[in-house]
Image (cartoon, rainbow, N blue to C red; front, side, top):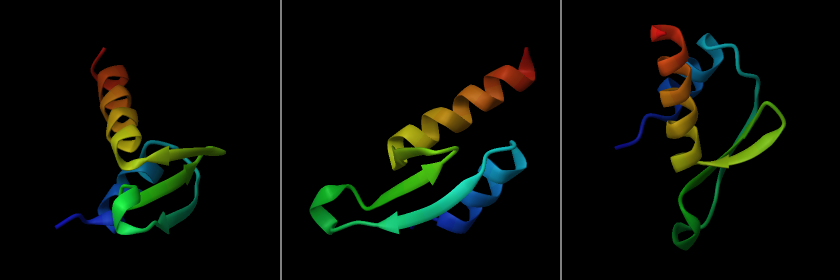
Length: 58
């Protein structure tokens, strides 16, 4: 199961502004996030967190 609260907490700890989390219909990909003024899918959010991690380790 997906822990949306944990994702939001991680994004905020990386300095991102989370305006909203939107649950979308089952056939549309489950969730969308309004982050830093951009509408992102769950896959996009994972990529954002991976980029944040890469920046912190370099």
